[in-house]
Picture 1 (tube, rainbow, N blue to C red):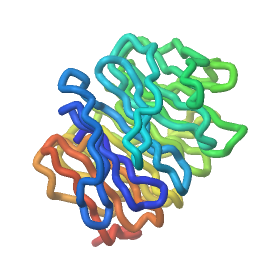
Picture 2 (cartoon, one colour):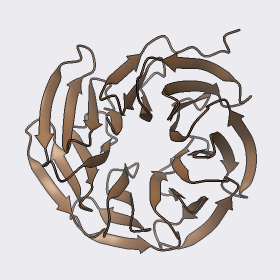
Picture 3 (cartoon, rainbow, N blue to C red):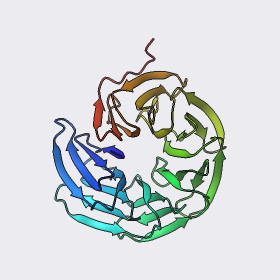
Length: 290
């Protein structure tokens, strides 16, 4: 499972897989609810729910450079967004659900009108594959962060498409980026570190170390107190975002952990792995276990 995403109402999990499918699962029973086969040649790399409490809409990115949007209740394919010239590694909805951002092997970030499917901006500046994109929180004052194999994080104005800042510090590919509610950025890298940044200044606030291989995914908890991560060391980990201390190591996957996501309430996380298994972890603690 290359990507997993928890629905805003916490009842469903969406997964994207290299078998080309997007699947919807019941988060309580684990039962498969719906399967959207995209074709064996169209490997699926990313999936994200529309951020609405009653959302039944998911967007997913594929090897062929398209983004596809489905109604998960009816199974209807609502829209196909075309424009990228390489695989789509990451998709993210704006907080109001009116726009999508995408990151691609073609070294661009693109912004789309989610209602019409029209591309509104193409953001050039990265010099290698763009692995991850994330919106800041707060409708009307949103910005975008993107993470790339060029070892940088870039901050963009999504209204104008202009580049505001380039953040440097990682010593290898940057694979994942996420915004906290209070405006900090977390990033995960091939250099085996998670770094927390001030996007206003580009200052490094904290470095989290403990993973023993590449870090594919980072995700802030909804209360900004913790960060979940997934790594090629086959573990998911939970970190104290203020102190940088490791809280928990979640062991169970037999392959790279490519994706993690928090449930609303922050008591559980879900992880997706190259072992083709989705795992839900309960009783995620808030303090360091000694």
